[in-house]
Image (cartoon, rainbow, N blue to C red):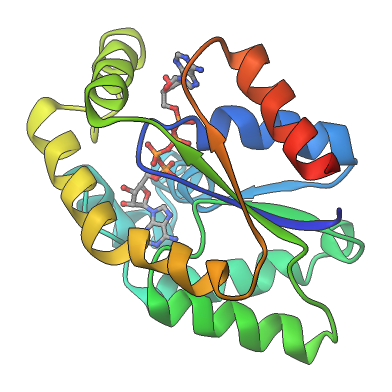
Length: 188
Ligand code: B4P
C-alpha cells in the first residue's frame, strides 16, 4: 500500500490517523490543511491568500489547492508513495489527482473513509477549539464545514467506490482502536 488517501468529515480523525498510517507504511503524510495552516502561520503570500477561506470554513479555490499538491507530490520523498489527508475534496480535485497519477503512470491503492456521526465530530472539534483555539473550530464555522463536506466532498466517495478501492472504517472509539481497524481493513 503506497498510494493512499483518507477521507471523512471534519473531526472524523483524518489528520490523527493519517500520521499513524503514514508511519506504518513508511510514506509521507501530505495534509492540505496542515500545509495551508503552516503558510498562514508563516504569513507567506499563499498564507495571506488562503486565510480568509480557512477561517470561514470555506474550501480554498481548486486552482490554489491543486497547485500545492502537485508541487508536493513531485518532491523526492513522495516518489515511492504518499498518504493524502484532506485532498481531494472536490470533483475538480479528483480530476486533477487522476491527471497527476496518470502522468506518473501510477494509481491510488486505496481510499480510507473514516465514518463518524455529526454529534461526535462536533464534540471533538469543540474540544479541540478549547485546547488549541483553531480559528475554524467555532460552532458556527464547524456547522458550515460539515455542510460543505456533505455537499462537495461526500459525493467523491461514490466515485472512488465505483473504482472498487474504498475501505470504510468506523471512526468512533479510542485513537489506537481506530488505527488498528484501519490497518486491519487495509491488510484484507
Ligand atoms: P483540515 O486540516 O483537513 O481539517 P479537518 O477536516 O478538521 O480535519 P483534521 O485532520 O484537522 O481533524 P481530525 O479529523 O483529524 O482542513 C482545514 C481547512 O483547510 C478546510 O476547512 C479548508 O478550508 C482547507 N482545506 C484543506 N484541504 C482542502 C482542500 N483539499 N481543498 C480546499 N480547501 C481545503 O481531528 C479532529 C479532532 O478530533 C482532533 O482534535 C483530534 O485530536 C480528535 N480526534 C481524532 N480522533 C479521535 C478519536 N478517535 N477520539 C476522540 N477524538 C479524536
